[in-house]
Length: 351
Ligand SMILES: Cc1cc2nc3c(=O)[nH]c(=O)nc-3n(C[C@H](O)[C@H](O)[C@H](O)COP(=O)(O)OP(=O)(O)OC[C@H]3O[C@@H](n4cnc5c(N)ncnc54)[C@H](O)[C@@H]3O)c2cc1C
Figure 1 (tube, rainbow, N blue to C red):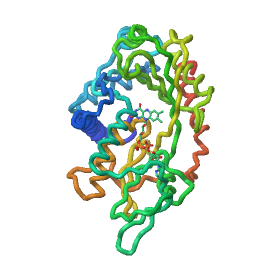
Figure 2: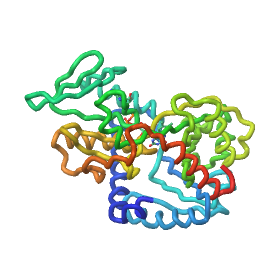
Figure 3: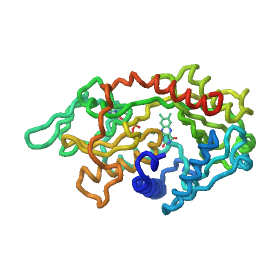
Figure 4: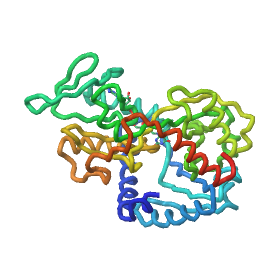
């Protein structure tokens, strides 16, 4: 909870900017006609303990004081109106949150950028960035060099350690893997019976789970931390399915049609960052919520680089601190993941 860790004033600023960021994204999709199945469904987050429920209730009360937020608690006895589970001790609904199809959004954004004259070179690794005598930068890629006045690095959790260019950011950013499974076709009726409000969903586990009906509302998508690194194996499928069935036991016999994983980036503070170092501008560290923040902070970092825009993001600041004993290889991640899994197990007696 941001307010407990960083104080109420900062938390309120983040909450206010989150509303602005979401509105900006929905307005953009509308204005440039990106059909990415954007649905402002609201999100229900189930509490895994009574203490978690109380924490949610405290935060909901605070959230509602910030313009644009609409949070309310759902008691355990009423939670079947949200989701067909007895695992949760009630939960919180946040009406201002929604979901979209990220791949469709990405395609729409790409088309829009290309239409505006942006040159996009895919599969083109930047190997190095050097200072030129005239104050410009040369960006060396595998297929040639570009000279530029301004450079923005947005490599986030895919920042590598192989080339010098990524090392500064990577020492300040830990990549972790998140994985998703999608059930076989269940049909609308069955999905609707399990998730009557057809919202986005989450829980209060330390190893957070996120789940939702797919955009066509005939399957269920479920995601959480992955124990695989590059390719999702059967181990990831089994782990995620077990977590899904814990929430929705009715799905114990359902098949899984899709699985994939990817990287998400964490700073030490577990908050996004926008900063400049040696005339290179960075936006990174969205943890598990980059779909809105990456779009918004991409805009904010561009404003900062161009010296335009009248209000920096609450996340603009100096470069984030390095992590102690971390040179870019997250050797400690398995230990942390097992520790968090143990915490969840202690909380609910299984997981
Ligand atoms: C399984 C999964 C589920 C998720 N679920 C959610 C969710 O429900 N809600 C949410 O808000 N967020 C979610 N996220 C997080 C969200 O997807 C990310 O935060 C977001 O994609 C970050 O966008 P980005 O453009 O900053 O970075 P990325 O999308 O990670 O892109 C970085 C790019 O930089 C490129 N790159 C790296 N190094 C170089 C180099 N040297 N030269 C050239 N290019 C380079 C990479 O190839 C990559 O294309 C999820 C992520 C995953 C993996």
